[in-house]
Image (tube, rainbow, N blue to C red; front, side, top):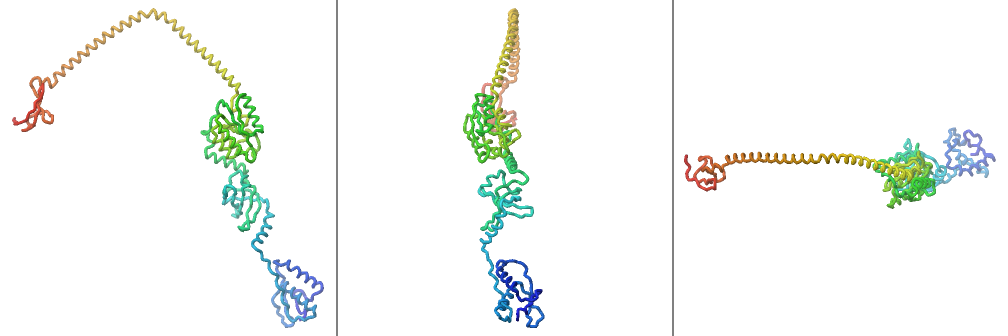
Length: 488
């Protein structure tokens, strides 16, 4: 069979030219690069013309024909006659990956393009690992899930409480975890969907403390009228402390002030404020306490919305005046404190009265008291004068009053004597009647009373029988006897 005896479907004469030989060589060299490509191979038909057959053998791929074509070309160049189809070349060995290799390949394909991506979803399967790391999943409306992790460094910066059902918008990096065979998103920032993170944290803590009764008016303490020493918990460098000191000393120049300097914003400020409140409570000479700072953004004022500060204020035995920001600002500390002041200056005004006003008030009270005493003295003097005017008249009337008194005394004695006489006569009459009715008077006339052995009076002989013991009572004694005969 000569090369011209091979027919390629739709290709005509198969005899290779120089250009085709070069192209075939290049294709062979690039076969390794094309390995693994999944393009559908071109189908060709061939048959053995020397066999005189008209039916075409099964279709072959372009790769197989190219290999056959190359073999024929080589044999022709050597002057050999090919009597049968050449054998196909061996398929190059397949690339087999290890699990680690394919994992690294997936990591390189996924992690680099998915850095600092934003994703939204609903929190589910939330777990707080040792109070530090947060583990949960984010799911969407189609119930698709992705694992999510927030490590301690990022979780400490989240002001609100994470829980199942919360809609979040998160930023993070996709991470492929080889040992577990899964991917997740490592979140470095998140906020509630549709509401600010700080606002949500504010509402969550407000609801919690309200349920515990920390905002109740019954637990709030009264501010003393005139404190001797005032404690102040604020920054030592801000405008608030200057305002407080200026107002306090202007209103009451010799008031004692004890400042506990603390950070009022930034990391660690809430813990410092709470510690400052606790420190002043260890003293027994503080009468009232001002806790606060000047104005700022919600982020600047946030330390006074922290739970640790709220609980320190609630636990304070010293009355607390909260003064955070401006009048439009309201913090959790304001709600827990015994009194809320619009500004630090207003807190100082609430804490202590004006000394000059107190002195003026005392002078006015002194004047009012003096006037009242004079009025009372004048009234008493007038009453005494009226009584003195009645003394001469009493002197003239005194002898007549004595005579009238003596006459009344004699009349009373006579009336008493007559009453006693009438009462004695009545008693004598009653005694006489009793004597007539007395059984002893009857016995004195010779009668006696017979009693049975049980003390009953014997009224009839029919109640007696022989042998009964009887007692006969006389006016001056008694005698015992026995019945020997009963007759009628």
